[in-house]
Length: 79
Image (tube, rainbow, N blue to C red; front, top):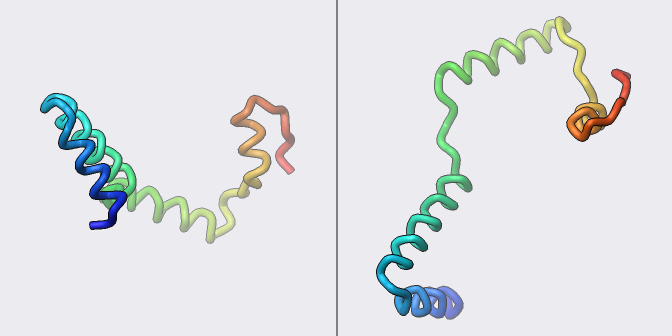
């Protein structure tokens, strides 16, 4: 264990029990977000469908700059 980790541990151990539990839950939640679960079968099917449509030329991709501007409420054109 690194010195910094040991210091954090000692500080955490000095907290009241309820706050220790809150800290543990927050650490677990952060780890779950950092290591997301694999996609389920329905999502994989949808990804494969969309990928096949793109590969077949059935859809026109939109540049990231346009998508970003639209998300920010901009009036960027499609091209």
